[in-house]
Image (cartoon, rainbow, N blue to C red):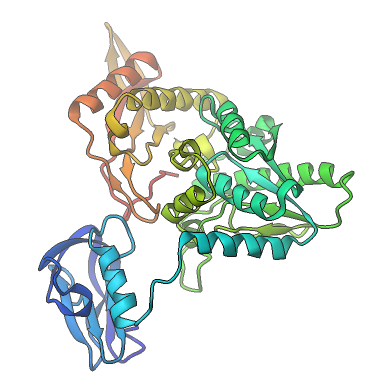
Length: 430
């Protein structure tokens, strides 16, 4: 906006990622808020000269223009991210922009969103049939609930057991989802297909793409079997794609970078003779949870810790083998068991455990030398998955986790804690 209106934007050689304190001067967006407040930044380029007619209303130590506005023109801009959980006054800034600057009225509700999404799915699917790629996570579960509300029994849900699930994941998904929605859920054992596709692959993007291809192949087979005898002419594939997935896969616009491929983003191969249905594609994680509550899904589903579609495969830095999968699966189970005893899970939104499979370090166990793998603990807090901060766990809890992991997993002789925010890191390592 600054550039288009005659201001100047430049790469000033100074990065600002994560928590940053800004100083504000009041105005339409920040009037009455603290004169110094924390925000979440993510940039290397910055506005170095505001457009004519705009007043500079905020700055930081590294950014001279962190916010500018022109109430007369009904325009305002901020350098930071007001939409994320880690900018505490962000919701108020957005509210003021909409109501004060843009003169918009808050006349919608999540119930309205649910109704529009259901109507959109009903119009798109028509008299066809849909199959949902259900992972058991909140995204695919809410997407399935939207489609089930639209077309009822013409939705079939398929859980692909790809061999990359957490301990007990398959049984939990079947129990919770069928009990909550009444939708039909079919489980397909595709472990060999996925592990074969990952053989010899260490590079993260190639790993994600191999998993994506295997998912497509699995659902192609599932749909072919269903289509052979169901009498429907049109079939649709339902996926729980979120806007954060679209952004990180470079699909939000011409300037979006491909940070990492998501297995459910990027469209379908031509040989698949059905269309995508992605009811959540314009929503963020926190909005999906609210939508799930609006649709009546239980807390066991909408409050569940996120688990990526590629599963444990992207929590192994290096080649995925059956032995390494079992190791990281056991580590994940230990962490979840310990954290379940903490009050409110110690405010952890997600807790990946990462195996550095290609790295070994010398240790001592008993009277002998060990040469084992490091494990990385990655506890984070977030709401929308677009930004995250590492969770400040008590030292005693970190020590308890380290002791159990190294005592119960002979292959592990070192545990480290990831204390990096997103940005500059991502939540997952791969």
